[in-house]
Length: 281
Image (tube, rainbow, N blue to C red; front, side, top):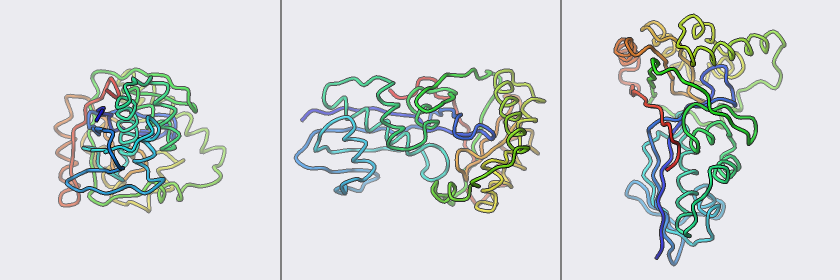
């Protein structure tokens, strides 16, 4: 039986004001092995099951080959926490499926497939290309990240489903809020490039997606406040939450981690994050 393997990174989308257009990839990965077999089967975490028609994992494998396949998954990306688990899973499985058929997929192919499967081009671009990326539909561009910046995730134990978080968004946003959001986005991009604390401070406080979702996950707001109190330059929802992404100077990481650990004690965990510069592999 022929098989193929691949891995893809988790990611944080939005970073505050970069709603649906900005994401950064992390070295927490989903690894997948896809092997041709007599029937469809998925194995993960010691469990095995036959996938239903239309099941997400099966569709990801079918994007790269006809099957049937045995799909084996090891996923270090927390699910339903705003860390891009779905995009990492889709990317790793689709790439492994291509390789099972002796084909090496292009980044462009994988980006289109994962965006179509998962519905979020920002997370898809981070999983496929790595680094900090900005998207517009199926167009993407890499963006610079200052090497003096460090990243910390505060991951609550309780999940928040993306569909629920999406349902909380407003249909219409007033012009003043849009203008403020555009300004914050500009400050964020320049702040990530320069590590300027003034610019990153001015990027805080999103009104498009974070404010409408605040009641869904009160702990997220608590953790953002704790991160800033501990010395973070910027703190935001990671994707649709409930995870908080804190950005700090490397010299301040220990203080930020300690403050977040105290704030989340008994309700989750704090994890340092390393940027994945090369996306899927």
